[in-house]
Amino acid sequence: MTPALVTTPGQAYAAGSPGADAPSLDTSAWKSYVLGPSTPDVGPVGAEGRGDVDHPQSLLKAHGPATTLTTKVGGAPASILLDFGREVGGTPYLDLTKVTGSPTLTLVTSEAKQYIRTPAATTVSAAAAGGAGQVTLASAANLEVGNTITFTATGGKPVTRTITAFDSTARTVTVKPALPAEVAVGTAVSTSPGAPSSDESRGLAGVGGPDTFQPTGAGRLTGGFHGGFRFALLTVSSPGSVSLSSLGVNFQAFRATPADYQGWFLSSDDQLNRMWYSGAYTLQMNMKAPGLNSLPDARIYDGAKRDRSVWTGDLLVQIPTLLTSLGNAGAPYVKSSLDTLLATQRADGRVPRLTGLLEAHLPRGFAPVLLQQLLRLRGSRVHRLLPLHRGQGLHHRRASRAAQGTGVQQHVPHGRQPRGLQRPRLLAGEPDWRGHQVQHRLLHPPQGHGVARALRRIHRPRGRR
Image (cartoon, rainbow, N blue to C red; front, side, top):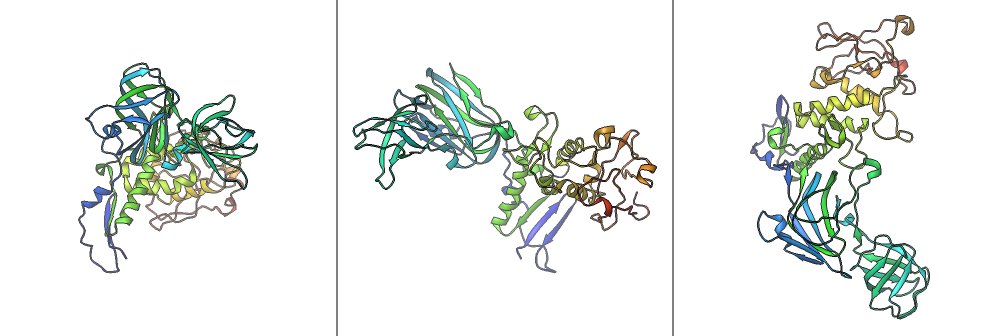
């Protein structure tokens, strides 16, 4: 077994062979594995120009000549691919020092380099004779001047040319040199490396997607919010020129530095250490700060991009991870995420599986399991975070003895329950983490989860109120 030192908020222990002493490790070394940026202003660590780009490496440092991108009529659009070295999230910005002509700038982001561009994949829709320099295609999507274009007939030899122009409306593409022979209808067409694209889906998250700018002079340009990406591609997509002094990201996920970690992990295995802190950082990328995206509360989303919704199944893993690594710093995120779910509890007692998306084809059962697991943490900070809601927030009516056939006993272990507030319905019958039975009961047992008949009043030992 790999020797390891582990701390969680309030305790520390050594893990290793049975009976082994604490391993001899430099206990300060864990800080080097923390992935959160040291400042909210994050710059790139790599830059790669394509087309007419001067001094791309200047964007990696705070000095040097300005980075200039120039696109000429009929030429390949100038672009620069920036690598931030790790997943980041927030709003990208560009500091322009000079603008020449009327250029249009596009900025797209992606978590992986291979998805920052999308090659065209279409067919020839009208036959083109040998010697022709223009071909009509079934689609003009993802075409870009300067890309190579390949025509491949069934059983034939591929013919590769360079795109010099295209018309999206007429779906025509101009190539050079001219075609050596006739290209038949239905001939497969592909391009490389493809046009700038984003791996974000605004339809799911409502954020992200391409940013388009039409600058008229020097100054700062700020893009929209992008939840999670590593690569950014800036392209001058129309004739003109721009010079930049910097391009970076205003980091807007939860920025945890070593000082924020109340629990940490360290072993003699470098890969295992990196895995632990990558997991912690992944969760931090999913944490939406209060006020971000026009939402006043803090939330733990299922992912940095895509759905950006509170999912009960994800919370089963996220909550213990958050409390183990960040402790009290994560408490507001846990509470408000539970508030978001529990405030929409249905009249029949069911708790939604997620917030923000339709639930028609989603797996069942995560919501009651989540609440059960949280209840098992009675006595910890999680139990104190379980929200209390008014009236219809959790119970559309208070159950009477006659309706239930028995009295309902509700306990608030950390202080008296305020008048008019009610505890959320929680599953009972499972021992909590200290081995004691918990005393809770559903006011209105949910239907369809297969647990209602198994619920009984279970008493905890005296003194455990």
